[in-house]
Image (tube, rainbow, N blue to C red; front, side, top):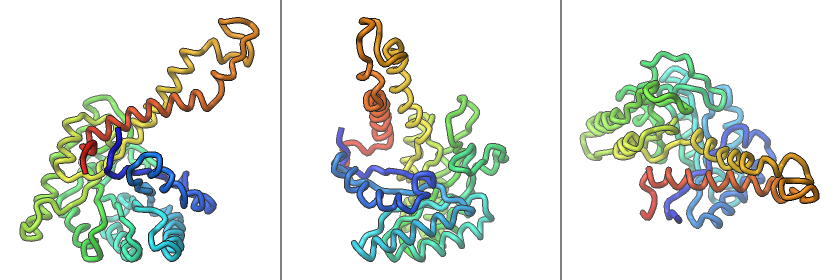
Length: 295
């Protein structure tokens, strides 16, 4: 399956904390585009207020790369200031987006709280009412950022939780995203039906009808990190269980005491099994989000 639509390679602080890693990123997007035959978006995820120095470092790398090649190193960055007061969240995003827009960088911001824990932001104990962003908050974000440029998206909270939980424990309300669109459209005089680019955080474990409702209401990006982690593990786990008697020693297996086992314990073999199951899960996500056989 080939998709002509962009694929997002999403990275956290753990992937980009080292200055030397930026040198590696200079080639990764081109390599991924070559092998997948589709555009690749290089995106950094979940930068909380305490990690702003990391964000500053990435922007410096973007600006240096732009000066050299007339395009930024990354395609987009995310600021997760959802733990901060709303006005501070928006003001900080405006400050950074002003700088980012000059070199064509996309900004993803979060307003409202996504439950669970991800990249050092722990919201496991928040009140459930905090998991639903209000329409006027969304419009305040839109008003502040649209004055600078159009290249931004909003991760609004609609009951999202990072990770996968027992059915019934998460009350996801993707229908609320339609109300956000309608409210902002009304404030703009009804000129645009869906003026917002929205992001679905904590998409792992979601029902297909929930994903469809979210996409219909303007979601342009969905995070499925937990599901892809599990998919990657299953291929490796199943291989290890199936070949259990072939990976206990370097030499000797059920086929004979002198039989070598290198072709079983070679990491390139069992890692590949994880890659296969991961690919299948990504295909499902592409189907769910409607980006197969579309241009």
